[in-house]
Length: 217
Image 1 (cartoon, rainbow, N blue to C red):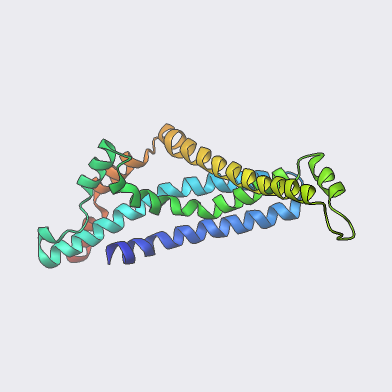
Image 2 (image 1 turned 120 degrees about the vertical axis):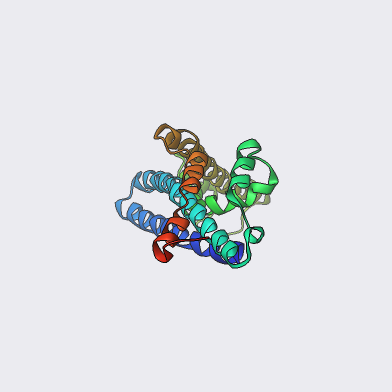
């Protein structure tokens, strides 16, 4: 219920915001033309990386609320995902496979912008000056059969353009994500792990339950 239910529901609105932002910026970039599609794709990557911060807060609050309700229903041993051991474990060994699911949930919001950057990268490589004109001179205008040698190297060049552009998009998204999460957010005083610990210590679900019921065991 926690992993396939609550966390999925918490993640869905942020994914939809990221997807909507990607679609809007792609559409606007095509309307403006020129270099705008590439610039807006980078802006989309920045926004997608920044969405990770509020998503992490929502996940902490959601997990706390779930565990508190489980505890009230069956006792302290019914907690599913205590946050203190989880956050301490991430701080001690952040690359342990045990915590990859956390990163997958947080970084899923970047998938739409990642696809947009991959498309933009492939388009950028397709528009290399001189290369497109060379390819058009080789391709027969009347759809006649091409020599086997030309067909082989032409297919190789076209394939390499797509893969190189996709790799450029992946590299750009990784650079933006690392830059924002590891440097810009901490510089603004919003380190993800420290913020998650502060939100967990504040324990908003317990405060809200006390306002509702007056007192809790």
